[in-house]
Amino acid sequence: MSKLAIATQMIAYYNAQDADAYVSLMTDDACEAGYRGAVVREGKEGTRAGLNAMFAEYPENRAEILKGYELGAFVALHERVFRSASAEPFEVMSIYSFEGDKVSRVEFVR
Image 1 (cartoon, rainbow, N blue to C red):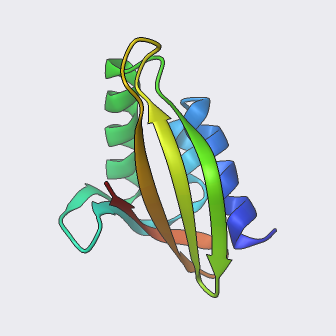
Image 2: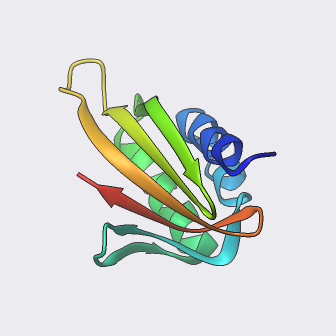
Image 3: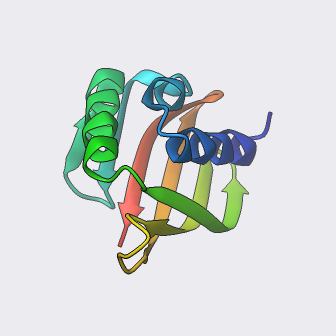
């Protein structure tokens, strides 16, 4: 499976609000962070807990991939995120860093 396909599958799990499946595609010490900034979710367990809290707060949350790119050990996805049917969507660029076939870091540019 290509790295782009793995990142795309992560978004499918995100949209299904399946934090367990989402983190199954990550290394044990993976994290999510702002681009070149602070880590917001540390490790698989921190990511799982953070996602579950967000899904509870935004039960209609989903992301739509507008464009995806793969280059070496990196994938960049341009996404449109919807928190609810009534909220204004926002766009984000997510950058996935890989170690082998697992994601080790996701950074978000907003």
